Length: 106
Image 1 (spheres, helix red, strand yellow):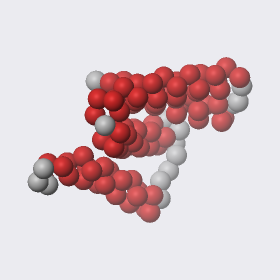
Image 2 (cartoon, one colour; image 1 turned 180 degrees about the horizontal axis):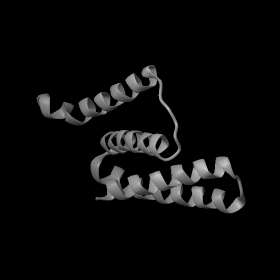
Image 3 (tube, rainbow, N blue to C red; image 1 turned 90 degrees about the vertical axis):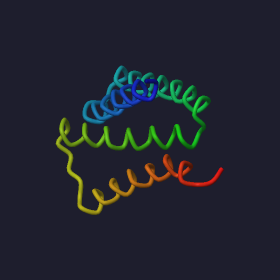
Image 4 (cartoon, helix red, strand yellow; image 1 turned 135 degrees about the horizontal axis):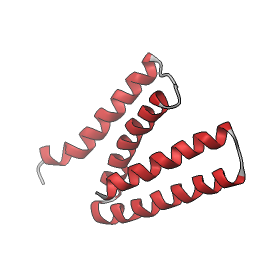
């Protein structure tokens, strides 16, 4: 649940950052900083509970996919074939990192 909340907060922060780049002002910048700070505070708790590698890897891939979805659907950004391959490989890499311990002897 905390991972979902942090993802929503980071998506809001990324969207606010994009809005700031389109029309910079102090209040948008303050919102961006506040949202990223809140997201990182949530991540600190996740790191404590699940370990740094797992928490940051899961958060990273979920944010990677979610931010790209927002970038494509809301802001009309495009991705090249090479970038798409990179996104796919990133998802595969985090999947291997996450499930890897279940396939090795302990």
